[in-house]
Image (cartoon, rainbow, N blue to C red; front, side, top):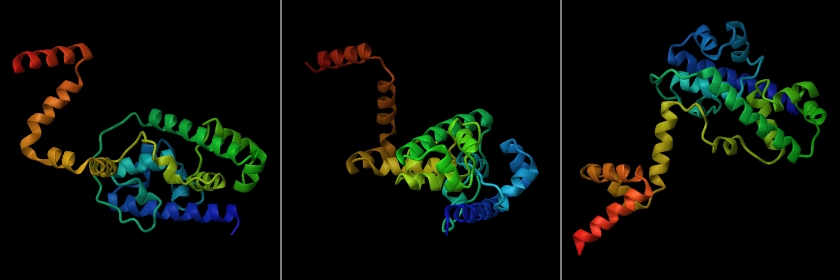
Length: 226
């Protein structure tokens, strides 16, 4: 299957996954379109796979639905129940995220030693559209981003190792558990013990103090000890 056909198929799959999670979250197409700042017609086109959703748009939808981001592109993922999420300045956050991804898109093209014209032929796009992608002026459909990352031996997961701007509560909980599991077992046991909450709060307070203040506290402790 050539890249253009693969991208078209991937867009249809992502559209179906978004529709599935949207229905489970009890959101209408208009709700999603209003949240993303696009027309209901355009959002319908995305769900039908006729247009591709970008990574910032999928991150925003995951936040809106209150589900892990993986549930919007991984067919084997079982979506979690939606949670209430706080309002965010979505338009600004998505613009920043689009700019970040544009840089990675350009870096991948350059690493693969391809011109904008060449990558355009692979993606079924004009060199002008590729230029728009690289300047962050146009959203890059996820399927086209995946194809470009693959050209330079990267995966979408590599891009997601960077902390995304929009993180759904379900993803926040998962990341917190992952960081907790990375701790030394003794430290993890200490942190999880409810009776140690006071010590942890003291540590939090100390971490916010300036170096001079910490040095003075240490000197006072030494004076008491000796």
